[in-house]
Length: 298
Image 1: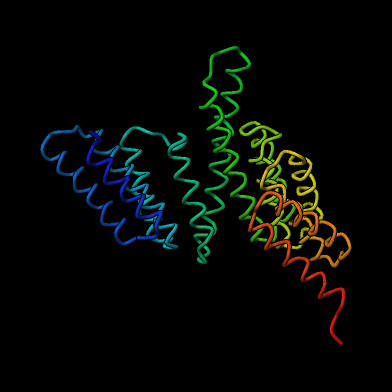
Image 2: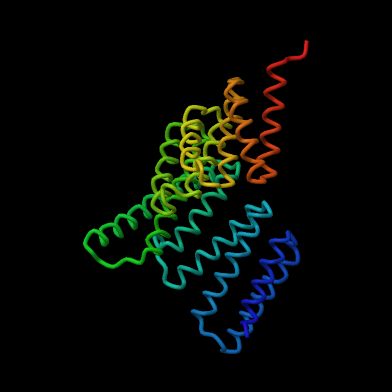
């Protein structure tokens, strides 16, 4: 029989997935009360109580982000971090760095100058410390020491996430050159985590290209999309249609109408073949815009 506390958290997450946030909050608080009761009755020791509380509060903080309640999320994540310190974690440990990165991302959405400064400091702190961890692990591997592959990939993924998050922050500051460098560093790490020819890696290129295009950074965005299209060619990925259509949309934004039409038509054909409703809709909208610009009224 499953632990009632675990069941409460699972039920909370299920309600959260259905966007029933008030009910989910009630279930999370029920889990916290159950944890308190077990501690008071001596059924669990202080370490287990602290670990369970950190787990529940971390889930609640993540829900607060989903609800767009950054200040609530900040408060909860800070308590989680303190609980991790109470369990003996150090500031550079992966668990703490993950929370630090979440806080930096939260701060980056806030308007106050001190929060913006805290965001940048947080990103730099996470990158510097996780880089040291990754370098240390690479050293062990080079020396022939056994390192679990999953653990190594988790370390790489955390560093990649830190670079990607910082790059997104730098874009908001119009520090475009540094932002693109950050994205490229995250791509290099993603190749190791997912594989250079994987759909996850190609999708990451595609998503980043869309972000850069919003800032009119069309040249690097186009290169990323061309690479993602080459990776997906003939593999039957649903994302392949999206990659081609996104290239067409970027060409449309640059008034390259002939190229945009070619790619959006190709994406539409592929989207129909893959039964991708989203791709079909986006391709048709792109072609509609091409037609409007090609035949201006009056």
